[in-house]
Length: 291
Image (cartoon, rainbow, N blue to C red; front, side):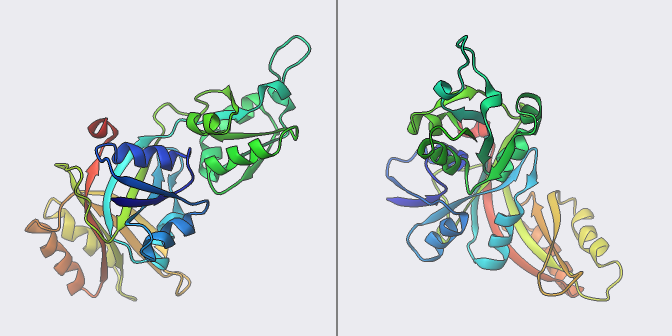
């Protein structure tokens, strides 16, 4: 039996996790309202893994979650996969009907959702609910739950179809994200290797902290990968939170640590005084691979 910690039932995280673990029969889901509780569940041994959304097609990196992985916990990355983020406007149709039986979305006073989901639907909100107040909450599922518990207050939520169904609410508008290719990348973190599926694509994630007062250090780091023809799929700078102007670099590498070239590249980077922390070496899955 595998135990998985994740955001609430009906969230995109919930749908994505069940997509990854569809090949396994014995899985126990532990849903949490806050991402901090998701992490701590695995840190404290209550669950085997945590499911963490880390990047979105429209909004890019989910910085809060990345900072938790770097600064708050020490949980190796065990797998990554992508899942489509299809958002909908959710509420009670009966509260929005006019005298002719038509739906008046302008009766909605406030829209709740996760900040990333709100950002994914800005064009829809501007076109159909101009000037509406938006309020961020911990997850899309939490937003839908709040709407269920506060009837008659003119609030709606952005969330998934399953969340609407779970809470006996209506879909007021479907597929409202600004772009059709809206995908979220999820990371499975924990201390046990993920073995349920295999992928030909294996990635390695590292953190690199440059030495101080070393002109051209980042160039040398990138050169260590470049001359070996090692592809980097992502590089992002984030503050170390130790000193103003001091940053680490989060780098995703399209190669396994078990290869010959990558360990040599890391040794070269360390030789110039850089600090390297390996966050994980893991299989990477596309949505099509898992379908």
